[in-house]
Image (cartoon, rainbow, N blue to C red; front, side, top):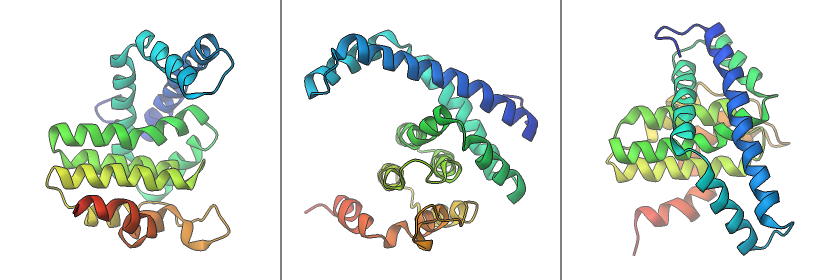
Length: 205
């Protein structure tokens, strides 16, 4: 990615990333077909997953997420019109949406190894760009990963949730207005999911 990226460069890089992540997904699908034997039991899926991981170059996936992280960083520094353009662009790019779904987990790992708050913010930006376009329940688990990684490294994420939430869409993709990505981020700590799945891990008995 260029040192001083423009929106045109960002959109061009997203197009390339879409192709690269699609290659990885296709390789994964091939492994499932070759090693899963048409079965979806735990053993078959585990064997297929191991075969895929052994034949996929980890550094390649890591480098793709590094580039995607640059897109997320650009999003955080952009105005509302450009943020909307980025969200609209990825809406039809399923491989990018899947990568954005995985990106908070990647950021959580980087956060735990570096204690760099930027990874919390770019992980939250990935959620904002993804914009609950596949399954809003996945947003909860992604937020939990980032939240717990932050606390583990001594970072309090509340303000980041609020600030990045202000950069997210306030459009709900369900029949409930409160299900906007903005609301997911800014009110995560008030959610029933947080109370049942995250809070107990913050104060273990």
